[in-house]
Structure formats: structure tokens, C-alpha cells
Image 1 (spheres, rainbow, N blue to C red):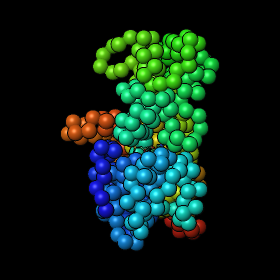
Image 2 (tube, helix red, strand yellow):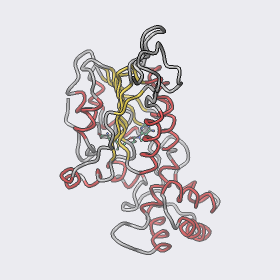
Image 3 (cartoon, rainbow, N blue to C red):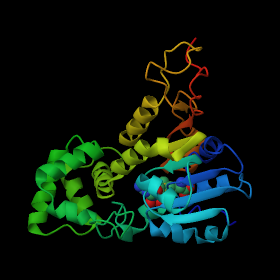
Image 4 (cartoon, rainbow, N blue to C red):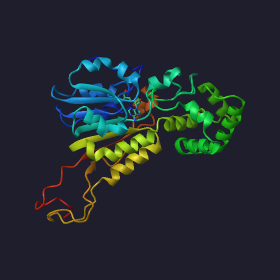
Length: 324
Ligand SMILES: C[S@@+](CC[C@H](N)C(=O)[O-])C[C@H]1O[C@@H](n2cnc3c(N)ncnc32)[C@H](O)[C@@H]1O
């Protein structure tokens, strides 16, 4: 097996993620965001010959960059959306799995390739699609959406307090000439907001458009909603998110799946209606330390949450283990 290519992507929280993702050497695992395959290769190094790993990414570049893995009999590479995971697993002939990892957002490769149109630092077409064959590019949203809709997207997904000002500046610019490149859009936003501090003024706008173009929160919500059909008892879910919108969804879904059963321990089965099915592996979110941030500044906003599926409830008549 080749080592991962650090120029493609340097994984965030690598050892922390793999330690939580792994539960059994011959288990069935999913990497829902293959990217540069750093996490997946580290997991594969711990897995035995009877294991299986489905490596999923929307971006055909990620699958092409890791095509050597397709020769590993344990691995199945699939182009697809983790929001459709139950259907992907069914197509692979697999049932519930022992571990799923999502390392959300974009890879360094996607940001660094100007032609993909993700970055205000590299001039390129205003595209931003993770799967270049799916849905309209960012230029369609930027040039055709009503101003109020643009402002809503930039406020909701970019958490940009001056979203209205940005949307109106985009509207004035596109009336003169459609915005076709990342450089043109970055200049319009910079002129609208001015430069304050080290952060580029277009950072939030680009994040918002990327999230909207790829329907990122929708995919995450569909994934979280299907988790109870995807995880086997004892299976683990690990999610690394990079902004508060994602982390909020993950935190809420994991909290809602936790047991809050108040039945007596000797009760034959739960009657309070809150048995739960997922146990968080730790109470606090895991963040990278200063050493990792120095080595890999793009990891600085990473937040990891992990949980384990509880064993199935005992059949009627056996104690179910509620609070004493
Ligand atoms: C941060 S990178 C993952 C890096 C990877 N863990 C590694 O070790 O190199 C995120 C990847 O997830 C992919 N991605 C994002 N949303 C996706 C989705 N809904 N379904 C499948 N892949 C997705 C992106 O195309 C990108 O390649």
C-alpha cells in the first residue's frame, strides 16, 4: 500500500480519528469522505484480511488519486454522496457497519486546484462543485439568484454579518457583466467589505457558496438521519467538522440518540420511551493541539465527535439496564 500524498491532503486529527473509528480488526468500515485517503490508509494498516472498507467521495479526483487502493481486496472505492449511505451500502451488498468516518469540508487538493473554483486565492472558473458532474456551478447561483436569496445564503452558510451588503455588491457587478471567475468575485466582495485584519474578506462568502452549491448540510442531515440504519451494535461514528453549522448538527444528532432512560434497572423493558441507542465516546469535543496546528494550519478549526452504538435492547422479559 502506498503512503498518502501530503500534497493532496494532510489529514486532520489522524491518530485521534483512527483510534475512535477502529473497533474490530475484521470489521466493515466506511470512509464517507475519502479525500487524500490519509485516514483510510491509517485505518487499513490496523485492519486484518477479513475486513472491508468502503471508500466514498463525491469527487472523482479523490478516487483517481487513490486508485492503487482498488487493488486491495479489502477495499471498494465508490463515487457517491455520504447522504445516500444506506443505498451505497446496499449496492455494495453490505449491511450495518462497524465504523463510519466523515471528515467534512473540502480537501487541500480541491482548494489548491484553481480550476475547481473553490478558492479566492487561486483564480479559476466560479465552479465549486465537489462532483463536477452534479448540479449547477457556483456561477449559476452568483449570477442568477435573487439578491434576497443570495443574502440569505451568505448569511446562513457563511455567518457573514454584512451579507446584505455583499449580495447588493454582487448584484451591481453582475448587471454590468456576469461574474465568471473566483478572482472577479473575490474582488467584488473585497471592495464591498474592505480589508480588516488578516482574514480575507471573501472567506465567509466563499464558504457559504460552497456549502450551498454542494448542499453540504443537507447531505450531513441525511447521513445523521440514517445512522441508526447504518451502524451495527458496537459500531462507531466519527465526524470531524470545520465550522459551527456542521458541528451543531452533529452535536444535536448525537445528543438526541443518547439514552435518557429513567426506568428502574430491573424493569423488564423500557417504558419511559427514551432508551437511546448511541453513547458518546467522550463528553468533550476533540480539537487539534498546537503542534498539529503548526504542522497543518488547515486543521486549526477541526472538531471531532465520536459515538458508539449500544447493543440492541434485550428481548422482552430480560432486564434492560436502565438507571437503578
Ligand atoms: C477534508 S477532505 C477528506 C480528507 C481525508 N479524510 C484524508 O485523509 O485525506 C473532504 C472530502 O470529502 C468529500 N466530500 C464532501 N462532502 C461529501 C459528500 N456529501 N459525500 C461524499 N464525499 C464528500 C470532498 O470531496 C473531499 O474530498
